[in-house]
Length: 404
View 1 (cartoon, rainbow, N blue to C red):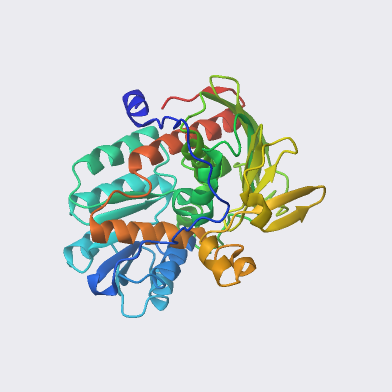
View 2 (view 1 turned 90 degrees about the horizontal axis):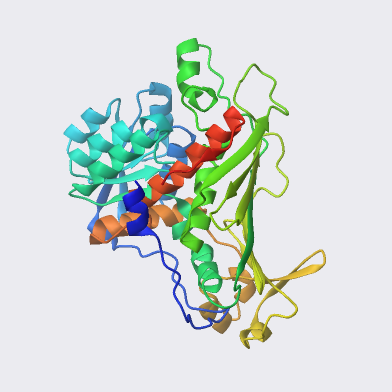
């Protein structure tokens, strides 16, 4: 994958023009409903059901099939998908000829096998992130995608998020300037455990708590957030160290419910990352500090905090502002020019849909139009490699080199 890294690294563009805080930015490129893309969702667990819910909002897509080996989950998914047909196996769904595209939301360790089946069948494929739980699994998907007849996309959601796209234009201009540090977290008080009376079913449903296959918090959650930094900077960390413990869920699990790690770049820059299932304070965010400003991204919201000695660019006078203790943030609003002309600027603060909606919207548009996806599986493989290394560093308590 080192060759891919050289080929795909994004070079920082020089002389980017300063951009207004009120740019025109469309939400999602949606094909006309007449395109009638028939989508099958594979995996009807928590993420699969979320995907089903968002697909019903997107014009140009019809949920035609729900596939899950677990009958109860399959039935639950079908209740959310009027008119869809249920299938117990991927083979049955593909052989039916009833889908043009699929969204793979099965457990991470099964992504490579399922994705390859679907790619070989010639349908458009969306693979939820992380891409796989092993480097070999990632490589298998990347290799299969190179010969795909349809679009193959990964569900790393930052790259389709309108607020994140807007904030990235600031980051890559002189508004933020030289990078100082990066930090991210995901805190959500939950258990990751699904109750089940049958031991075999319990093991299948609770794969994220199986130390033999899980990527833990660093891989399952961190991969999405690490990719935001990769996308913004065009660079990747070279080593990672970290630690973890069980702070709340003393239920016999071996997988840590709270972690912290440091990802280091070849020039000494770092990402500080924390995640926990034991507390929800401040939720999920990414923070990039520069010598002129800091950008904080909260998935549905974004803010820029300018340094007092940063040059004024003019647009600040018209910007919407929000107070955070002693700091004042400029809210980053997608479609702000249009909203400002309608006198509805404050109504545009925050996205009207979850980040997943925009990611799926981009996939549907790419499949319908035959264009490149917002996130390729090659880029997802890089982000996943970082997540795998971070989980290994935390689990083993040893610094890990990151090979991309």
